[in-house]
Image 1 (cartoon, rainbow, N blue to C red):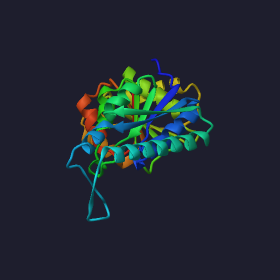
Image 2: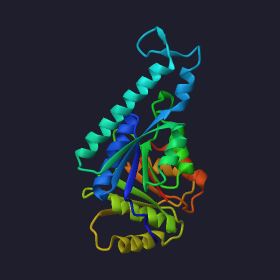
Image 3: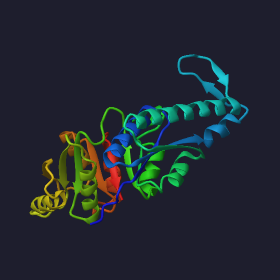
Image 4: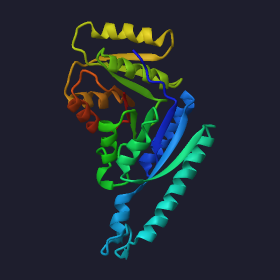
Length: 277
């Protein structure tokens, strides 16, 4: 089993609550792993195209009036947001004495992140973006990162921590699940607890998992729990995870679970998720 060493962590920043949670999680990880932090702000080309249309208007949340939206106005707004994102990254990184860089890109958000992030070992972004319509479900950028990303991907939401609380690893004995376990142990904090949800239906699966976990831990002391749930249906797994209040869920890309099950599971929980490549 080879664990990918995490030297660089990229984080998408747009100053939304989800991206602020992502930045905090990324900084937490970077401090623990002594990794470099890369902040990425993408100027959405679709917004600029819309602003160039003659009928484009800005709808204000707290006013019945509308205003003409033009490209110059939007350019100024994007520059302001980029500066706010840069200052937020700087403040967060300096508080932890992290080496950090900041990039401003322009284009399709998902596409630009996928182009910029492959050099990083982990990409952290919000489960959803600014749109109120996708607060509970995954946003399009998160879906693209999960399906097309070549790096580890962590999806965050406000109100939870990434590694100080409980960690739950989906485990079936595959090499992918062993990578997930190794990564979970690498990012676990001093106060973390580690739970393993064993999906292998074999009667001795729990005992084998316990032995493999102890071998990987190499004498490290961390509170550990084991659950045997030999299901391959995403909603059943999600229901159990909600019941035990899992914290960060760690999944290995390429486990024996069908991709559709993993996608259904991620769709049906509201916890942060780390998908390990």
